[in-house]
Amino acid sequence: MIIFLHDNLGYKILKFINEKDSSSIEKLILVNDDQSKLNKYARKYFKKKIIYWAKSKDNKIIQEIRNSNSQIILLVWWPYILKKKFLNIKKYYLNTHPSYLPFFKGKDPNFWSLLKGGPYGVTLHHVNNKIDSGQIAFQSRIKNIDWTWDAKKLYDQSIFELFSLFKKNFTNIKNHKIPAIEQARKYKKINFRKDMLKISKINLNSKIVVKNFLNLLRAKNFLPNDGIVFFDNKNKYSINIKINKIK
Image 1: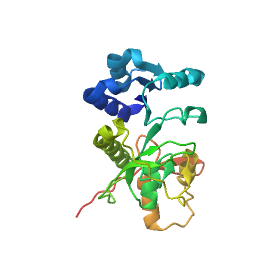
Image 2 (image 1 turned 90 degrees about the horizontal axis):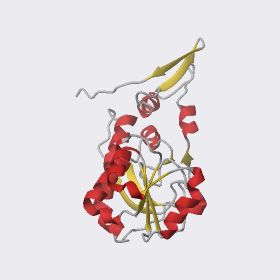
Image 3 (image 1 turned 30 degrees about the horizontal axis):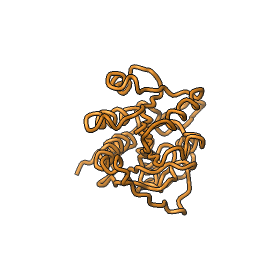
Image 4 (image 1 turned 90 degrees about the vertical axis):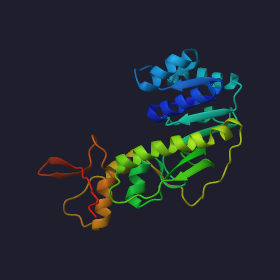
């Protein structure tokens, strides 16, 4: 496997594969050479297999992919969109996405799923040239979500569920037993960060349904980031809330 890795999920999955079948890892692509837990672990066990990401290294990385024996490319919490020239070099490209596709493609799916009332879940999907629109390989739902859930709690649970989903299907992935289920075509919308930021600014004189307002508040509740933002007398304010179940 060639694995593009980032952040805590990248660390958890790399550690799992290393303990389960380290020989299946041919190359690791990391965002940069920092002191994160992921990078320290990668340097300890796979120092000679690491390539650090940079646009100037596109051709080198593509050549490494072409020269590898593996037919599987994993994108684990990868923060960049791969250019078309990266795709179709190998047979399988799988990406981790923290929503129940085809719902909530693109950025901030934890925000949008809480705002819209679900569905909630995570997906491993094939990669094509459209954001989060490739065929679905594996999915699982996140259940029992109530009003006490906010964006941070859903984000953390999504990491846990993606890791569990990968562990459950690792053997099938390694053996190329990977389903490819077409996404429903009517769900085409792709969300961008600017969309979330725009809807998170409210006018003090606007009318809004209370339920929708509460969903907006908890969907944007992700400290230390700003919550819902409003302006008054040229001053900027941010609202973060905590909803407790008392009965």
